[in-house]
Amino acid sequence: MVVGGLREFAHRTGNGSGTPVLEESNGEELMRVQPSVAVALGNRSLESPGTLYITSRKLIWLSDVDMAKGYAVDFLSISLHAVSRDQEAYSSPCIYTQIEVEDDEDEEDEDDTESTGALDLSKIREMRLVPSDSTQLDTLFDVFCECAELNPEPIEEEEEEEEEEHNWVFSADQMVVGGGAEEDGEWPISQSPTSVIGLSIGDEGGLAQPMLELQINDQRFDDAEEMVHESETKDH
Image (cartoon, rainbow, N blue to C red; front, side):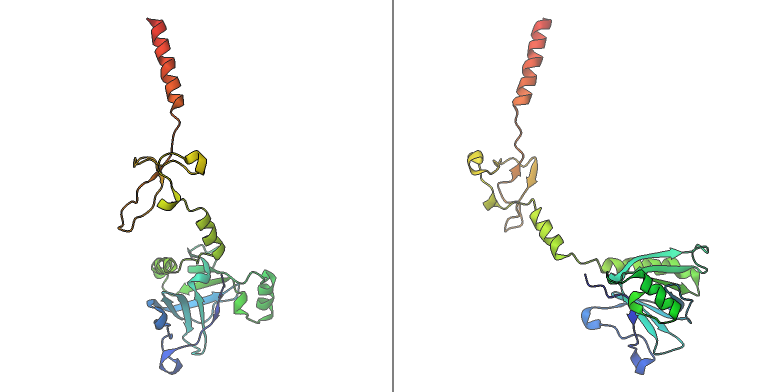
């Protein structure tokens, strides 16, 4: 999966002074607007408050002071989000997020950029969002969860191939009715609907016949009945 990470965002409506421009043609919708939210990137100090825009695709933070300043991160790049109220972990109640970066990025590079003052957003792994009204944290968290569900992690091609290899649903052409199972190397099929471990969906939406069921060797049950019968005969 291609990791987008944190990036600059300055696309605003109204000649660059309004709300963020969304990708409406791709179905992006605005889910919530939270004013007076400060942001802290990595171990840096809080920046001046801005406005947080949560869309169905990403988080957007736009500065209220510098109209050319803003950040965005796709929900697909957010690996964790949580409400933090522990002052030992951070001085202010906040929404804590972890951001995925490219695999070849070194964590030491992030520390270097912070110590030198240079800011490389592609290396930022943590972001804290601090609303002036901390009572909104739980509401924001719920919106985060809702949007995260709208953006499930894509299934890799290798995972899809593995799922196909372990698909236990058989078509009618792959099954044989009646005898000849040992010769053909296929399992015998029963018309009984019990003990089904695989089935095929017919053209009309019903269950295609026949359905595959597990064949059980009844010999062990016959032996058990004979032993019980012999024991009862001796008792009499």
